[in-house]
Image 1 (tube, rainbow, N blue to C red):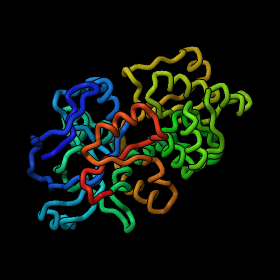
Image 2 (image 1 turned 30 degrees about the vertical axis):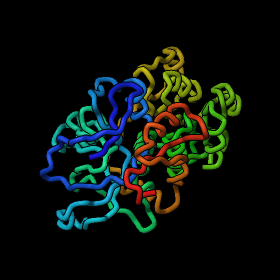
Image 3 (image 1 turned 30 degrees about the horizontal axis):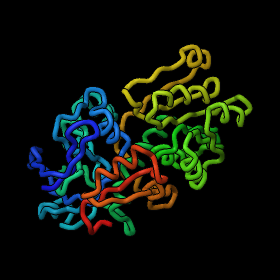
Amino acid sequence: MKALLIDGPGRLRLGEFEDPTPREGRLRLRVQAVTVCGSDLHYYKEGGIGSAVVREPFVMGHEFSARIDDDEGERYGLPRGTLVAVDPAEFCGHCEWCRSGHPNLCPNVRFAGSPPVPGALREFFWAKPETLFTLPAGFDAVDAALLEPLGIAIHGVDLAKIRLGASVGVVGAGAIGLYLMQVARVAGAGEIHVLEPLEYRRRKALELGADAVHATPEALLEATQGRGVDVVLEATDQPQGPEDACTVARIGGKVILVGIPDGDRFTLTASQVRRKGLTLKLSRRMGHVYPRAIWLAASGKVNLKAVATHSFPLEQAPQAFALQLQRSDGVIKSVIHMDPASR
């Protein structure tokens, strides 16, 4: 089948791919749309994230939608042609963490697009029925693909346990940051401040409901009379991001780190974190959140498609990655249409 293959940092090409995934217990899907995630960009830039290292050739992509392309789908109420959102994670279901309600921490998980498990940037994908979610009327292939990053934001806000009326800071106004901001509002956040160096992304944050936007931590602190905010949700790819998040948190505040830093490292000023007595949590993917993500989007409480700024056919997929990496032309998230009918 046709696929977008990565042969190493910065090296993408179209080619043929044969999926080694066992077919038993899985349905064949025809992939419709794949959106480019920040973690995909880490593989593209650096060739890996921690121990998850690209072994060439590899297929990325975990934010995706598909149509059932298997007559066996009828057994599960999924007739051929049904549009589905696909949870990229296959949890083991029996480890200590799965059994305690934290499947996102499962050490045995098979996660599409995270080496060595091939992802969705190809014509066909085989998935377990329990990872497939049907959509309400009006959802298209792009909406379905974007439910995965929205799910990441839901999990991050769950960890924050935002109190009604609490002030919230969002550090980074990429796709995840913009979703975090909207979900935080639904969860009861009061004033929301967004910290983002890129002007076009600050504009987008205001369009989607931010109360104030700032280019520097100092500007955010000045706007809060030096107090800072109660809860900070960090969603950057910069090693500086966690430090900035701790800088703008109030004394006794909470910081949730959702982003993945370039180089797989970040540093914090120990005295600042300690003297403020901050609560620091790190977010790992998500659990069973798709039903809530679908509800948030279907109800209009979250503007799902606002982050999808650019579209490309599979043949131009390398351009989608290059554009998103450069952060030019107002890009927030690129969509790659694997099936021309999904455009």
